[in-house]
Image (cartoon, rainbow, N blue to C red; front, side, top):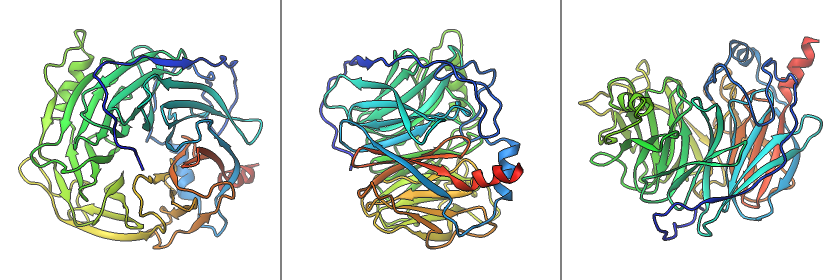
Length: 440
């Protein structure tokens, strides 16, 4: 479980960087993508959204059919030297043909590359926070379009969000404002410089990573009554879902006319001044009717919501009526509290909090680990509701402890799972390989 935050001053500690060797340029085509990238430096004319899918991937996802064959094969397991829990893992959504991912454990952020000529992963760079009391819980990737810089963003028990240039190893920014630990960070789908964070201080916040500006504080009058553990944007960047220890899931409007949109543009203007962050006290939707315990993971799935609690299950549901949009009938004067339950998906051995599920980029599978080191897989695009029990279960021989988080490469071919024993396990998507072979 995430540790209690240690007391710390307001000063910004410098990050000590272990600079690895720069890798040579590689030009190779993979996963049907023709974009040529360097190992850790790219020139992107247009940055794709982490949740965006190409026409090709959408066609592929609907063409695959349910199969009794387990879709993922275990390739290798490696261990980080600190031998402590790895809480977070995330692939870069911008390095499509040359997959890279980052992990966070203890006070360390590590960046890896997927080996194309083998089954392994290669450590490229490791960043250490000089504060001994820091323990990172969450990590994500972003892209600074103004400086053409790829960055990793991490937060943990000191409540400071670190923004680090992956290529140079420089500390780009430290985002300070939360009053307690950072539990989750997600990137705005429509703007790779805007992020949302979830904190133990009962709030979620929205930031511009380029100038450290806090744009919005979501909480207060009708906000959460305990720490916020998970957040997620919808694909249009209009709503932010938040899940909390207070057993609730809330949906906040952050789109056009919310005030957040104005501050986003203001933070990018020449003066880059943000007078005061928007304070959003009232969510568009809120419910305690889905879970009766800590809600530690939430994902918006089109008009529906997947959420997980420490009740050995994942719930599929939505606000409002079946034909309503994601926020149901919620508006600026009325909070939607009605929900429709679609499915309770059994996930055994998950009564401890901070175990997070993920949906693959092709939107074919929902995958989650548990305390025994198993990985449960549900098929979610076969034309019907997900099954109550998982369709497939992976039993990694090398892992017998809690798997904290799972991440997919943007092409959907690679899956990484991180666990309490400092392990990093790599899996390969077999069905995509069979599909490719059938084309030849």
